[in-house]
Length: 166
Image (tube, rainbow, N blue to C red; front, side, top):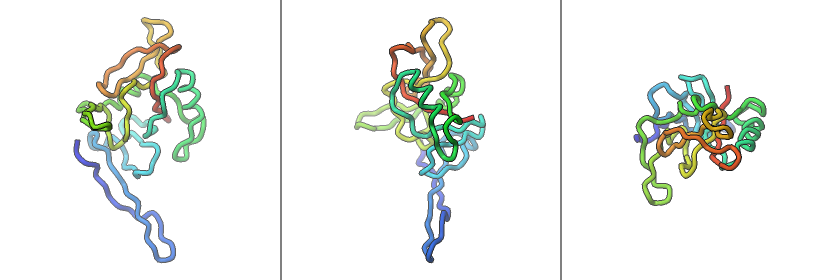
């Protein structure tokens, strides 16, 4: 993975002092994500038209995830504008060229853009809103250590949550 590309932009001028903010680009294919400020809590996927929560929420139940996303307010998009993504939507974040990170000193494979979505936990999958038809009571989830989908039990599993705005 290449280092994040950064650019500086003027974000404010007061009393003769110029405040600079950094603008960053993801390592995804060119044009995938709109440029974003490193302080932004969401990122816009130009290809799909979806806006994603950059920093995942902690692990929680399926019902908790649905409620959490419905109440989320980020970057000017208020409660009711966010939701739990579908399986197909969450798969659009999977990086086809996984990279290695060393969050605890040991190598960990990460299959999501680390610049666009920093600090991705991969010890559990991420919820989707899509139910798993072959097994009642299960929903699809995406594992960002491999990029693979899997089914998890709605009643007992506690995957992570990354909300989407449409």
